Amino acid sequence: MSMSMVVPETQDELIAFQRWFYKKTAEIEHGRRVLEDEKKKFELQRAKLERERKDFDRQKEADARFRAQEEHVLVMKQKVLEDELRKLANEKSYLERQREFYDRVRQFNQKQEPSHQSHRTSIKGELFFIGVKSEIALKKRYKDLIKIYHPDNICGDTETLQEINREYDRLRTHFAV
Image (cartoon, rainbow, N blue to C red; front, top):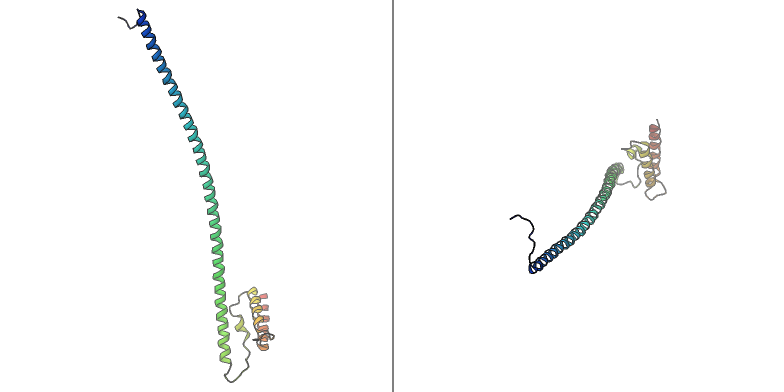
């Protein structure tokens, strides 16, 4: 017998065949609908995942820009702190030199001043300008000394001021050359 389609011979067989055919068609149609629904769900999930990926990429780029800005700010802060640290070190060095200078002046004054004398003797002007290496430093030191030794001040001393002025004039001409 060949594999051709079996043709129902009786009415009952025809009805059974139609029922079977209808049932199979309904099953196939149901399967197709289920597959279409699944396909729609997968398409929605794919679209949602694509949106989430794009959002993640945007967030990642924004985070990278933010980190770059933060790193730049950190580098700038570090430079400022390093500059300030250098300034503080220079200022500390300057203050140490000033302290040494004034310690020498005080020691010199103590050596020059006998205990029974109440007046000060004049100090050599060179002592006041030890360590001065430029005209700018010379002017700054001179201004500081004038503030201290001007005769109108409580600690002022005319003789010392005259020595300071002589040494300042000598050093000014030295730096001007």
